[in-house]
Image (tube, rainbow over all chains, first blue to last red; front, side, top):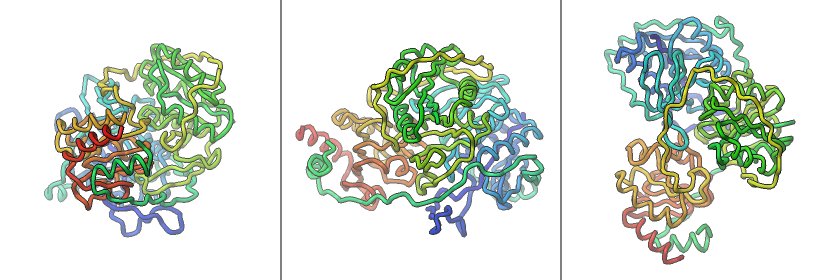
Length: 249
Length: 313
């Protein structure tokens, strides 16, 4: 079976984000960009499914600016087979992204789409569920374990109370959580090999999808800063402060 | 305007986050209806009818709604949604799983995890792990919204006597089914609604060492949480995780023990009223946001703290 893994280019998770002074958004100039960490876990899982004989081909898709091709190359260097880049310089929101992925699914016919559960920039946690809805496929979100089972998958999900296991019939959407796997580093020979792997180019127009945003961002501000407090010298002093100053015990 | 709130419940009782979602709905304004969908969920529907501010309960009770699988529940919500200006749910794992599916079926761009209501179409929400707050305005005819529970006061669980109306449950399309679950010990308060949270980090060193938090948590009536590092190290189960990708908490008192204070952890607890940090590394970033910091070996300080609290009564 073919596996499709959509990947997003985001500010690297180690970078401290800065809000622009005009309040229009977050400053992206000269900031290190990387693959969304959850998407890296999805790529790793797809490659493992291929290595385990369950998947026949791993296709990586990214939607956005020209430099998304670098993100696709990263996935190809990890072991994905080929890439699809949908070029757009517009602000893309999850509904539009899900519609474009729906069109890619129609072209490629994967049996499984693996996505990160959320992107660490907008923290929306929506795209996988929306793609599942548009395709009429089942969804297993927040996956921490995947077990193929005869035309279906048993997926263990991280839920509020603990762990839940669901059975989903293929074709299906799975969104991955942190503890599904530990993504590999690409080796130098594989990075070289990835340069020769094909990336097909497309646009939202080619896919017949309008990328027009539905949500208008009116402003972006820094959250109120929390003031650091005091250091206490002993446990006695701590209990005294909690009891008499903060009055929380 | 009228708002449909999707209840989070276990068929018997409502989960506390439902009351915060109703609180957010009350800020939007308009009639508030609440959907209780499940199997044998009449007790939860009766509880929902008492929630302050609720005008009507819609109850869908059917075997197909067992464990509220999104594949069954989403079409039900979509069928009801056209009568409402807003569909809201708490941003729990259930809410996050369900509402984007509802949004896509309605051709609506949902708004995740709102932290404030500016007007019926304009909301604030944290982005970049809470390092920025965006104000967004929706142009969609129905607003589909998940609510960050800690950002809104809970409404009173009683005060209304709203009628319960039964709605038909959809067919199960057979795409998915519940297989099983492993839920954590629930003898302690729920992490997201506890008044006090005691959390341990990588500094705990082992799963066994985590047990030293039990006595302290017992004494304070606290829930126990953990940093991602402690969960990844296997000291405690995943549902203990507080942070950007775990649970967001805002208790009266948060005690961070052996937690260095990575940005992604702070994203989950920095709205706590009072923060205490105990860490042997005086340079740990957690001290920059803690109201009271104690530089000490946690294995010495935690038993001492427990003893001192007992003495203080």
